[in-house]
Each structure stands twice: as C-alpha cells, then as structure tokens.
Image 1 (cartoon, one colour):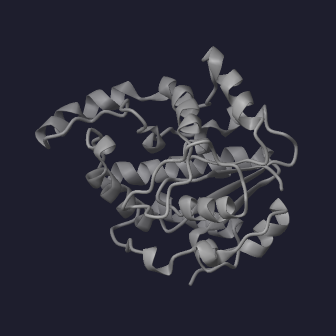
Image 2 (tube, rainbow, N blue to C red; image 1 turned 135 degrees about the vertical axis):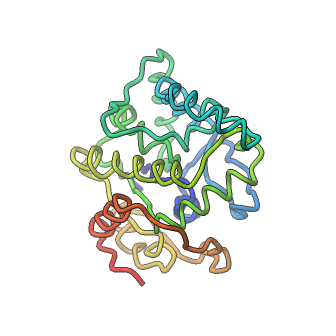
Image 3 (spheres, helix red, strand yellow; image 1 turned 45 degrees about the horizontal axis):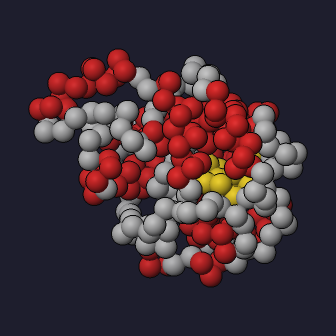
Length: 262
C-alpha cells in the first residue's frame, strides 16, 4: 500500500475517508483521538501529527486580526483566541503567506512519524503545512484532499465551535468560517496541486456513495470498502448565503474531482 496524507477543511468528510483507510489496514498513529458526538465513529487523527502541525503554524497566527476582533468578542461574551490549544485547524492564511518551519525539532519529529509505514495521516492543517512534509515524503506518496458543499462545512464548523469545550474560547462567525474554508482550499488547489503530482481531489459525495473508492483503491494499492460509511450520520444541512468567491472555488474543486453533483 502507498503512504497517504488526508487534507482538506475540517468537517468536510475527512474523518469518513480516514475511517475507510484505517479499516484497510493503514497505520494512523499510536493513540487516535477518541470519538465524540460530532464524530461518533472517530476522527482518525493522531495528536502527535496535530502537534507537529500546530508548531509549524504557531508562527502564522494573525495577532492583528485577534486584536481587531477582541472588543467585539468581549461584547459577545467570549474571547477571540486563535492561539488556543489545538485550534489551528481553523486558522485562515491568505494565499500570499508562504508556510515554512523555523522550529529545529520539527524536521526530526516529521522523520520519526514517517518511518512507520504504510501510514495514512489525517489533519486539516496539512492543507497549509504540506510543503514542509513534502520534503520528507517518499516518491509515490498520495495526498487526498476531501471537500464538500461550503455551506454545509461552515454550518458544521460553527456547530462544532459551539459544542466542543476546547473551541469555546475561539470567536468565529459565519463570515470568518467561510474565509477559513476559502483559504484552506485555495492553498491546496492553487499552490500544492501545481507541484505535487499525486494530489487528488475527492468530493464528500463520492466517498459517501462509494463511487470514488475503486479509483482510490487502485491508486493506493489498498482494499477499500464502503461499509464503514454510516448513512445515518449525514446530519448537517445546507443553508446560508455563500460568498461569490467561495462558490467559484467550490465549482473549480468539483471540476478537479470530476464531480457533477447529486
């Protein structure tokens, strides 16, 4: 089986694909995050991977943005704090930001986790940090970017931020959540896809219905089965005004995935 990374915005179906690949026998970490009501079958993420990416992204938190919204946040009874522990999967980095690592131990830690093969590591933060990891990946490693309808993802993000304790300190509104979605997929589509040969795009619906699994199975050399998918867990509904730039980017992602829609 070929090594694999899963990227894409959180709340987009990455855990569903992670579960399918975990079932196929991939190593995903020594101790995965425990299931939660929002992901009752598990997240299939390893804290060690999250923390490596958190270290990389710590240098890119936009302090000015935090200060700008601090007064608004206090009025709403919460604190806008993107520096919070494990919150950087919701970081919003503009396209002109080039991510690099200046933390000495990061490269050592990356080499250690990549030595355990065949691996499939999942983390939304890869959407920004992939260029750091790419230097240490073996040829043939596959990156899979999962996405779904942006309004569904945004609604799910906002619900997650309201219900998970570690996100309670993070102030985020709908406009900000759409910017998170837009910047994550802009980095993947317009930066990473240009020079990473084995980066492929898959829509949530293609995983949910199993139509993408034969292609992924052949590309990865892994036996993938859709019986992991629980049809009862498709709960978040669409809704809300979608910004024009987000609609356009979603259309381009669908084209990259050859996804026509339901």
